[in-house]
Image (tube, rainbow, N blue to C red; front, side, top):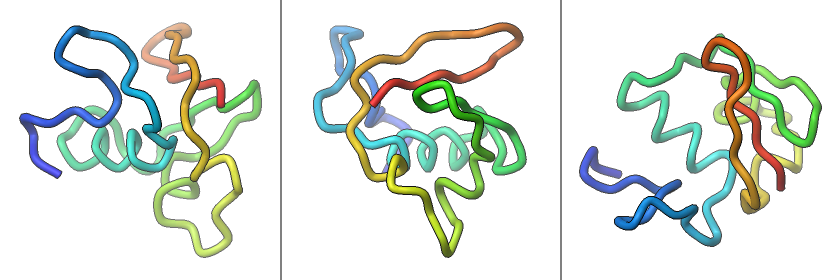
Length: 81
């Protein structure tokens, strides 16, 4: 992945179809937006980013396509899959 390509948003600013939670978080951590120690909420359940990206026992939601992204308080990432 390169900085010029955002796996989550297309060129028109719309959610890119088929982007998984893990793909989005990998890109966000690689280019400095977030760290592996931060939390993210997927379908209302809290996970550490590192567990979804790097964890040996990665939850199944990590490889599911994102259907909705919304912001919470203070940079809180929220995804629906």
